[in-house]
Amino acid sequence: MIPEIFELAGRLPVRRLGYGTAQLTGPGYWGPRGAARDAVAVLRRAVERGVTLIDTADNYGPSIAEELVAEALYPYPAGLVIATKGGVVRTGADAWHIDGRPERLRAMCEASLRRLRLDTIDLYQLHRLDPDVPMAEQLGALDELRREGKIRHVGLDSVTAEQLDAARELTDIASVQNRYNLTDRASEPLLKLCEAHGIAFLPWFPLGNGSLTTDRVCTDIAAAHGVAPGQIALAWLLHRSPVLCPTPGTGSPAHLEENLDSAAVRLGAEDMSRLDALS
Image 1 (cartoon, rainbow, N blue to C red):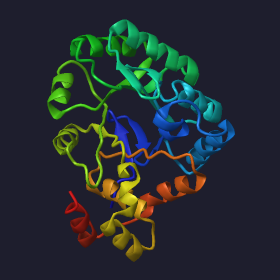
Image 2 (tube, rainbow, N blue to C red):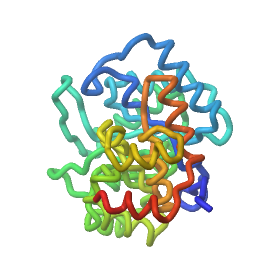
Image 3 (cartoon, rainbow, N blue to C red):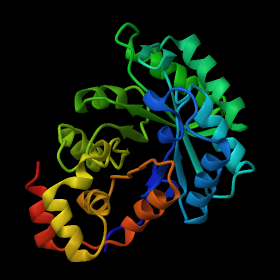
Image 4 (tube, rainbow, N blue to C red):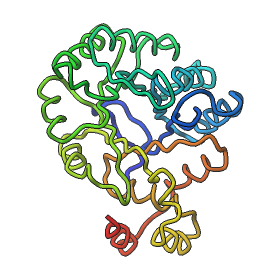
């Protein structure tokens, strides 16, 4: 049996296949993408389909994705987990600035609380570790926000296994979010560490930014199962490890349905062997 549920920090249950909001914004995650009502409809449909983990970030837009989440889903249904991120400042479509100063992290978190209309953010992820600020200061700021009840759990984005080990010496870490998919497994050591400690791994680019939908092996296995190639790539993640919690994003209602239907795909040992060999 493939587990459907993962318990964040051992006590916050979410369905493993969630929804990411980056694709609700424009190219480069900058500005709007289409009409707000279309994004609102997709978010509401995701929850109707049983999604219980919504993954967003303050710099998607910036601010736009968080505002859309609140517009679509507030007041939030019981059991819906909202995850967001802070620690990166955007000044243009191609301009990303890491800022992990404690005062900036606090300001970012409090701004996210206002946009999301929340008193407490379930999972607040440090979008990037700031190399110019000691890790202890960055995580210390998040710990302080947690003690104040403004965040419930802490996550990290784009870290190494060594950095996760160091972070765990400083505070409890509920999740990591790194690039990981069928053909990009550079974060395999991190995945093994997450498995050992029950830490959720939210893989970004789970579909290889679209490239896996045309992979020959994926298309062949998909044809045998009567599904789309992208569904095979997502199903592989769900079969690969019980801590993997993909949050594929899309602004297309049809693509949303396709992604969520991936949870029903059951891959056999031969399928997994062929897919594992793609690395």
